[in-house]
Length: 199
Image 1 (cartoon, rainbow, N blue to C red):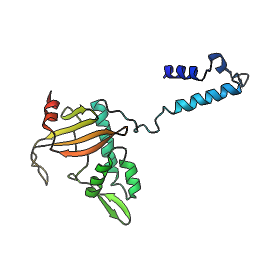
Image 2 (image 1 turned 60 degrees about the horizontal axis):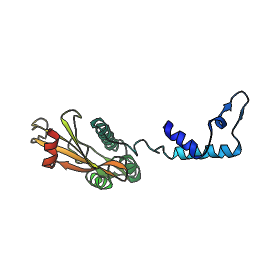
Image 3 (image 1 turned 135 degrees about the vertical axis):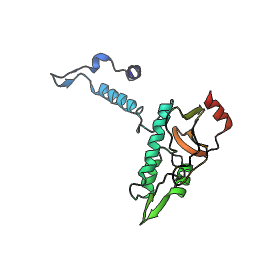
Image 4 (image 1 turned 90 degrees about the horizontal axis):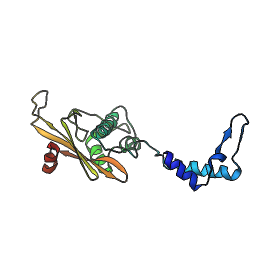
Protein backbone atom coordinates (compact mmCIF):
# COMPACT_ATOMS: atom_id res chain seq x y z
CA UNK A 1 0.00 0.00 0.00
CA UNK A 2 2.86 2.38 0.79
CA UNK A 3 4.39 1.67 -2.60
CA UNK A 4 1.07 2.45 -4.23
CA UNK A 5 0.82 5.81 -2.46
CA UNK A 6 4.36 6.74 -3.37
CA UNK A 7 3.69 5.96 -7.02
CA UNK A 8 0.50 7.98 -6.97
CA UNK A 9 2.34 10.92 -5.39
CA UNK A 10 4.79 10.84 -8.26
CA UNK A 11 1.93 10.77 -10.75
CA UNK A 12 0.31 13.90 -9.37
CA UNK A 13 3.70 15.52 -8.62
CA UNK A 14 3.06 16.20 -4.96
CA UNK A 15 6.36 16.59 -3.18
CA UNK A 16 6.81 15.69 0.48
CA UNK A 17 7.70 19.19 1.57
CA UNK A 18 4.43 20.58 0.15
CA UNK A 19 2.36 18.11 2.14
CA UNK A 20 3.53 19.29 5.57
CA UNK A 21 0.95 20.76 7.91
CA UNK A 22 1.66 22.74 11.06
CA UNK A 23 -1.14 22.11 13.59
CA UNK A 24 -0.09 25.14 15.64
CA UNK A 25 -0.34 27.60 12.78
CA UNK A 26 -3.66 26.10 11.57
CA UNK A 27 -2.79 26.60 7.95
CA UNK A 28 -1.65 24.23 5.23
CA UNK A 29 1.40 24.66 3.07
CA UNK A 30 -0.58 23.21 0.18
CA UNK A 31 -1.52 25.72 -2.49
CA UNK A 32 -4.69 25.54 -4.55
CA UNK A 33 -3.03 23.51 -7.29
CA UNK A 34 -1.47 21.08 -4.84
CA UNK A 35 -4.76 20.71 -2.95
CA UNK A 36 -6.52 19.70 -6.17
CA UNK A 37 -3.80 17.15 -6.84
CA UNK A 38 -4.13 15.75 -3.32
CA UNK A 39 -7.90 15.40 -3.74
CA UNK A 40 -7.30 13.61 -7.03
CA UNK A 41 -4.90 11.26 -5.24
CA UNK A 42 -7.47 10.46 -2.56
CA UNK A 43 -10.17 9.88 -5.19
CA UNK A 44 -8.02 7.44 -7.15
CA UNK A 45 -7.01 5.68 -3.92
CA UNK A 46 -10.66 5.19 -2.96
CA UNK A 47 -11.32 3.42 -6.25
CA UNK A 48 -9.12 0.58 -5.03
CA UNK A 49 -11.18 0.03 -1.89
CA UNK A 50 -13.94 -2.61 -2.43
CA UNK A 51 -17.46 -1.42 -1.69
CA UNK A 52 -18.30 -4.66 0.10
CA UNK A 53 -15.98 -6.98 2.01
CA UNK A 54 -17.72 -10.01 0.48
CA UNK A 55 -17.82 -8.61 -3.06
CA UNK A 56 -14.16 -9.43 -3.62
CA UNK A 57 -13.81 -12.32 -1.19
CA UNK A 58 -10.95 -14.62 -2.17
CA UNK A 59 -11.33 -18.31 -1.39
CA UNK A 60 -7.76 -19.56 -1.31
CA UNK A 61 -7.80 -21.95 1.63
CA UNK A 62 -10.06 -24.56 3.22
CA UNK A 63 -10.67 -22.12 6.04
CA UNK A 64 -11.82 -19.45 3.57
CA UNK A 65 -14.22 -21.90 1.94
CA UNK A 66 -15.62 -23.10 5.27
CA UNK A 67 -16.20 -19.54 6.45
CA UNK A 68 -17.98 -18.66 3.20
CA UNK A 69 -20.24 -21.73 3.34
CA UNK A 70 -21.13 -21.12 7.00
CA UNK A 71 -22.18 -17.58 6.09
CA UNK A 72 -24.15 -18.93 3.12
CA UNK A 73 -25.95 -21.41 5.36
CA UNK A 74 -26.77 -18.71 7.92
CA UNK A 75 -28.21 -16.60 5.09
CA UNK A 76 -30.52 -19.47 4.14
CA UNK A 77 -31.58 -20.06 7.74
CA UNK A 78 -32.32 -16.35 8.19
CA UNK A 79 -35.11 -16.65 5.63
CA UNK A 80 -37.22 -18.55 8.18
CA UNK A 81 -37.09 -15.74 10.75
CA UNK A 82 -39.90 -13.67 9.25
CA UNK A 83 -41.82 -12.98 6.06
CA UNK A 84 -40.01 -10.84 3.49
CA UNK A 85 -40.45 -9.52 -0.02
CA UNK A 86 -38.65 -11.38 -2.80
CA UNK A 87 -36.37 -8.38 -3.23
CA UNK A 88 -35.34 -8.62 0.44
CA UNK A 89 -34.72 -12.36 0.11
CA UNK A 90 -32.55 -11.86 -2.96
CA UNK A 91 -30.49 -9.24 -1.14
CA UNK A 92 -29.75 -11.77 1.63
CA UNK A 93 -28.80 -14.76 -0.54
CA UNK A 94 -27.33 -13.09 -3.62
CA UNK A 95 -23.79 -12.65 -2.17
CA UNK A 96 -23.52 -16.43 -1.81
CA UNK A 97 -25.62 -18.15 -4.48
CA UNK A 98 -25.82 -17.97 -8.27
CA UNK A 99 -29.09 -16.93 -9.92
CA UNK A 100 -29.70 -20.51 -11.05
CA UNK A 101 -29.20 -21.86 -7.54
CA UNK A 102 -31.49 -19.21 -6.09
CA UNK A 103 -34.25 -20.29 -8.48
CA UNK A 104 -34.16 -23.98 -7.52
CA UNK A 105 -33.88 -23.11 -3.81
CA UNK A 106 -36.86 -20.78 -4.12
CA UNK A 107 -38.93 -23.42 -5.90
CA UNK A 108 -38.18 -26.06 -3.26
CA UNK A 109 -38.29 -24.04 -0.06
CA UNK A 110 -39.91 -20.61 -0.26
CA UNK A 111 -43.65 -20.27 0.36
CA UNK A 112 -45.95 -17.25 0.24
CA UNK A 113 -47.82 -16.40 3.44
CA UNK A 114 -50.06 -13.32 3.71
CA UNK A 115 -48.29 -11.52 0.88
CA UNK A 116 -44.81 -12.24 2.23
CA UNK A 117 -42.30 -15.01 1.52
CA UNK A 118 -40.71 -17.31 4.09
CA UNK A 119 -39.04 -20.73 4.43
CA UNK A 120 -39.98 -23.57 6.75
CA UNK A 121 -36.69 -25.42 6.97
CA UNK A 122 -36.29 -29.01 8.09
CA UNK A 123 -33.43 -31.45 8.54
CA UNK A 124 -34.08 -32.79 5.05
CA UNK A 125 -34.95 -29.63 3.13
CA UNK A 126 -33.33 -29.66 -0.31
CA UNK A 127 -30.69 -27.21 -1.55
CA UNK A 128 -29.59 -26.01 1.86
CA UNK A 129 -25.86 -26.11 2.49
CA UNK A 130 -25.27 -29.67 3.80
CA UNK A 131 -24.61 -30.28 7.50
CA UNK A 132 -20.88 -30.54 6.98
CA UNK A 133 -18.63 -31.10 9.97
CA UNK A 134 -16.18 -28.56 8.49
CA UNK A 135 -13.32 -30.78 9.59
CA UNK A 136 -10.79 -33.11 7.95
CA UNK A 137 -13.80 -35.22 6.94
CA UNK A 138 -14.95 -32.39 4.67
CA UNK A 139 -13.11 -32.59 1.37
CA UNK A 140 -12.24 -29.51 -0.66
CA UNK A 141 -10.81 -29.70 -4.17
CA UNK A 142 -9.68 -26.52 -5.89
CA UNK A 143 -9.83 -26.36 -9.67
CA UNK A 144 -9.64 -23.41 -12.07
CA UNK A 145 -12.60 -21.14 -11.21
CA UNK A 146 -14.27 -24.05 -9.40
CA UNK A 147 -14.24 -25.48 -5.89
CA UNK A 148 -15.76 -28.85 -5.04
CA UNK A 149 -16.83 -29.36 -1.43
CA UNK A 150 -18.20 -32.69 -0.28
CA UNK A 151 -18.39 -35.08 2.62
CA UNK A 152 -19.14 -38.76 3.05
CA UNK A 153 -22.13 -39.52 5.27
CA UNK A 154 -22.26 -43.10 6.62
CA UNK A 155 -25.56 -44.95 6.73
CA UNK A 156 -27.88 -43.85 9.53
CA UNK A 157 -31.00 -45.54 10.88
CA UNK A 158 -31.49 -43.09 13.74
CA UNK A 159 -34.37 -40.65 13.83
CA UNK A 160 -37.65 -40.70 11.90
CA UNK A 161 -35.92 -40.85 8.50
CA UNK A 162 -32.80 -42.95 7.90
CA UNK A 163 -30.50 -42.84 4.91
CA UNK A 164 -27.93 -44.97 3.14
CA UNK A 165 -24.23 -44.14 2.95
CA UNK A 166 -23.65 -41.39 0.44
CA UNK A 167 -21.70 -38.28 -0.51
CA UNK A 168 -23.19 -34.81 -0.41
CA UNK A 169 -21.45 -32.18 -2.47
CA UNK A 170 -21.77 -28.66 -3.73
CA UNK A 171 -19.93 -26.73 -6.40
CA UNK A 172 -18.72 -23.15 -6.08
CA UNK A 173 -17.86 -21.25 -9.25
CA UNK A 174 -16.01 -18.00 -9.83
CA UNK A 175 -17.93 -15.74 -12.21
CA UNK A 176 -17.95 -11.98 -12.76
CA UNK A 177 -15.40 -11.49 -9.99
CA UNK A 178 -17.31 -13.39 -7.28
CA UNK A 179 -17.40 -16.86 -5.79
CA UNK A 180 -20.90 -18.32 -5.48
CA UNK A 181 -22.52 -21.67 -4.79
CA UNK A 182 -23.73 -22.75 -8.22
CA UNK A 183 -24.79 -26.41 -7.95
CA UNK A 184 -25.93 -28.98 -5.42
CA UNK A 185 -24.21 -32.16 -6.56
CA UNK A 186 -25.95 -34.53 -4.12
CA UNK A 187 -23.92 -37.76 -4.40
CA UNK A 188 -22.92 -37.22 -8.03
CA UNK A 189 -19.36 -36.13 -7.32
CA UNK A 190 -17.08 -36.68 -10.35
CA UNK A 191 -14.95 -39.76 -9.68
CA UNK A 192 -11.73 -37.95 -10.61
CA UNK A 193 -12.51 -35.28 -7.99
CA UNK A 194 -13.06 -37.93 -5.32
CA UNK A 195 -9.75 -39.58 -6.23
CA UNK A 196 -7.95 -36.26 -6.14
CA UNK A 197 -9.34 -35.48 -2.69
CA UNK A 198 -7.82 -38.64 -1.25
CA UNK A 199 -4.24 -37.76 -2.19
